[in-house]
Image 1: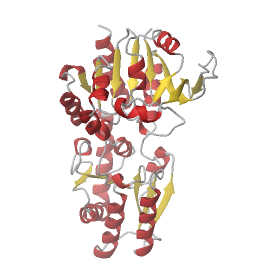
Image 2 (image 1 turned 120 degrees about the vertical axis):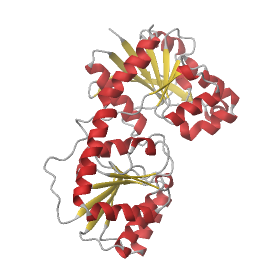
Image 3 (image 1 turned 30 degrees about the horizontal axis):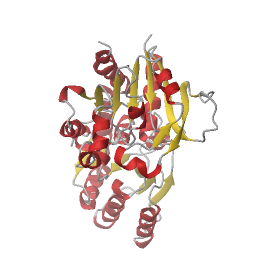
Image 4 (image 1 turned 180 degrees about the horizontal axis):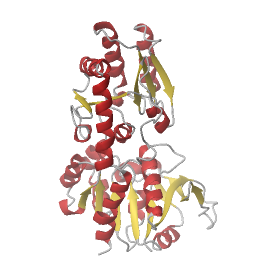
Length: 379
């Protein structure tokens, strides 16, 4: 029976795309009979005993927290934030598994301190677009990254090219796009097209997500287009930048959009997406944009920025529209087109669902990971 350990800087209940990815992957692997565990890091004291592996289960996924010390400024040249305690025990424990699966290039603690463990290793790069410049100009961290694993898993062509420019052989890099649980994210069977249209955004509230351009697009839509149905706009997600959030609220009040725009805060993504009719994601920079796939799986037409890799996911004119970044005018135009043509809106929503089922389901993702990574590592 194959045994895989996932080593990650953080895991649930920390909320983030990487953490949810590891949880969904572990759950899917377990259903296939593969033994999986997750080990994350924590900053704790040396008073920990060797009974530190106090396991807990998160919806059947076994999670262990390894005690470690935060190393402060020493992290900068190495991209290593923690010193794991009981290093020999750590090496012994991960040696019990057939494959070591590292997650996230944002921290190289586990890759560095388990480098001598003789087990096949793979690193899934979840944050590469944010850190590529750091690795290009930091030789120590770049060397740790290059030597960390036998194989590297990325989610887009862009990220594969990033790794190749760092010196990692092309044959060692595998592209496997994200997958969505299509049983969890699905259209609302009770949905009926009402007397108004629900438009939504879901993601972290920060400048990179481009939410202000959506709000400006809504203002243009209301002011310059003769829409035949009332609209409601829902902005959901955790606030990562309170200054930017205040800018958004001030814009809503300054333009008298209070009756149209609601800030929802963190939400349950499947339930939130089922309430929408159109999904808009005007992001300026993305590692992948998993939420766009989740919206598509929920049967929604999507409007996204023309950036990599969003423009690799969305088929323009088939399941939604790709618009220039920072372009509220184009957002308004495409919203008007969908609102004024309910038949088009429904057809694009159905196409969205079919595209995800065919290319981006979680089951398909896991199958590719096992075949193209795990089985290759074990040869």
